[in-house]
Length: 220
Image (cartoon, rainbow, N blue to C red; front, side, top):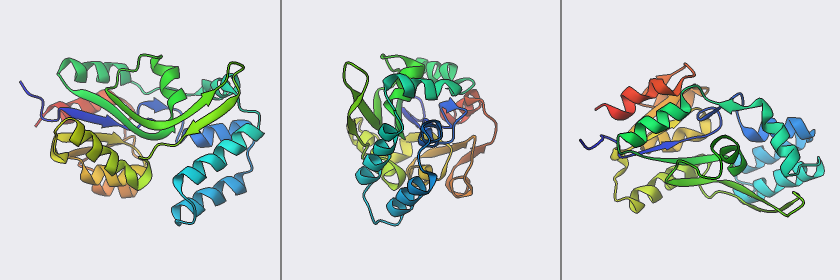
C-alpha cells in the first residue's frame, strides 16, 4: 500500500534530538560566547541587515574564539540525547516505504553523534563544519534552507522525488519551522515551543515521544 506521505521531513534540535532548544545556544553557553553579540547578530539576520551566511560565519568566529574544536564541540554535545522513540519512528517509517529527510538549522555534527556516519536519511539539508587532522575548524558551509527558506527545501525535495507539497509531511518544534509547516501537506508541531508554529500546523503534540507522530504520518 502506498503511504499517504511518501516523504517525511524532520527538524533536528528539539525534534529528533532532545535536551536542547537550538544547538547554537548549547554551544555558545559551553564556549562562553558574548550573549549580547550573539543576540545582536541574530536580530540583524532576522531584520534583514545581514545574510544567513554572514550570521553563520559570525557565530563560527565566536565558537573558534572560545576554543571550539572537534573534540570540545563533542564534549559540549554530551548533555543532548536522542528524542524518545526517534530510532523506532524512523525505522517504522522506512519499513512502510517512506523516505525520511532532514531540513534543519542545526549542525551535521549533531546527526553524526547520534546516527553515526551512515545517516538513515535520504537527504540532509543542514549546516556543516569542516575540521583539519588536528580537529581545528577550517571550513564551514551554511545551509541554504533555514528559517523562512525551509519551505524552499521542501520544494527542492518535492522536485527531486516528483512529489507535490501536499504529499510531503513535516515534523518540527519551533518558530523557524513555520514556513515549511505551512506548506507541507501534513505538519506536526512536535514538542511544540512556538505558538506561531502551533497555529499553522495540522497537528500539535506537546509530549516528547516521536512515536506519537506515527498515526498522523502513516494514516490518512
